[in-house]
Amino acid sequence: MGFLLRLGSYIFHPLLLPTIGWLLYIAIQPVHQWDLLVSLSYKDFLLFTLVLPALLWSYLKLRKKISDWDVTDTKQRIIPLFLYALCLIAILVMGKLDYLLPLKVFIYGILSSVLTALLLVLLKVKASLHQMAISGLLVFVIGLSIYFRLNLLLYIMVLILANGWVASSRLYMERHTPTELVLGFIIGATPQLYLVSYLL
Image (tube, rainbow, N blue to C red; front, side, top):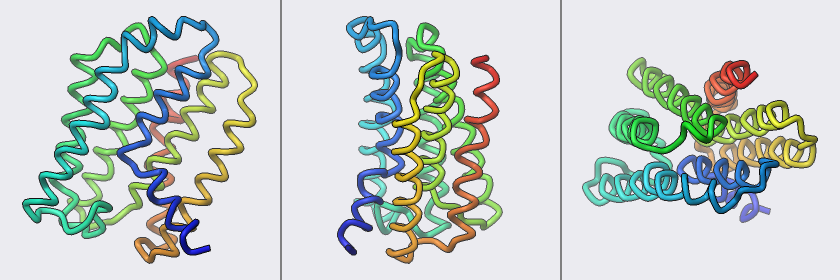
């Protein structure tokens, strides 16, 4: 049971969730021009939301600027969050996302959440980045359901369960308090919820 609870933290790591969101978008969108969509976006998405952040995290870990991959120490979160925000700004500026409006909105939502988490860290307030990421993904998929007028209830149910799994995992691993999980959920979901109105 303990292994399964820990697994939730690894499968839904915050660095992986933008890529999962991109894959879900490619799978869900009804246009069926997968070749075009993938060729327009995969390099930028993988580079700026996964590869570059992972390399930066690894560098910070090697330099002992962060003590663990989860960056549980609040003080150590400033540099990783700032660098991740720069990666997100880079994909918004240099990426070809104008043709992929929902993905662009998704990235703006993630950037808003990351900047909010950074502000909270400066105020010495800790929020769950795992919960922030998975809740943002949940609201993004709800937004896709509305935008494309598709029944995505199965995806939404799975992501609701994933939210619970991540929360249970973080509590089991004693990485967060319930308050930090609720705060993470709010700062992850709120920007995406606000930006859903932009899609409409």
